[in-house]
Length: 171
Image 1: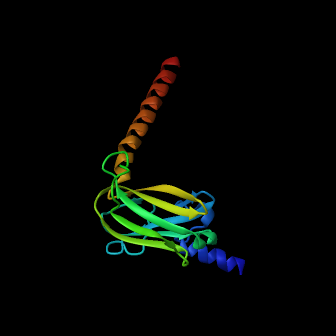
Image 2: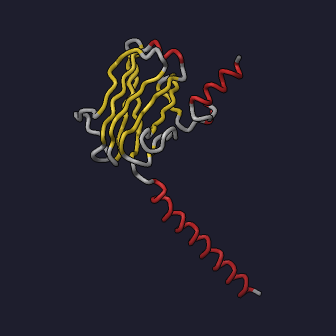
């Protein structure tokens, strides 16, 4: 039965073990799994923090700890206009405080290209725990990576050239 439960948990999170789940995060003592989907474009492919395209996006938060089912939780999604989130800004989509006995929270929104912040709030007794989740829509992070990779490879080649040239001169 334990094996069955771990297989079901892994399948619920894209076939990845919870221990190595890159979409897992923690708020206070509670663990959650976050995922984004593009139902109209890419179907069932799961994305974490970087969604490759804008448009209709389905956001889901799965409770890994069953104790969260007995806590009131809310989720607010904000568009970042600068590097900092403005506190007085209204959310563009929201799930109000309620109990989510199913163990997950789902939000569907039409999101344009840009950076967003999801704010998850958990009422736990007299405390409210919050976590900010950075979500990037349609921002190709690999394009930023390629120039850096080219620079590193060029530097390695240049270093190898000078080392070989120095070894030749010393012979």
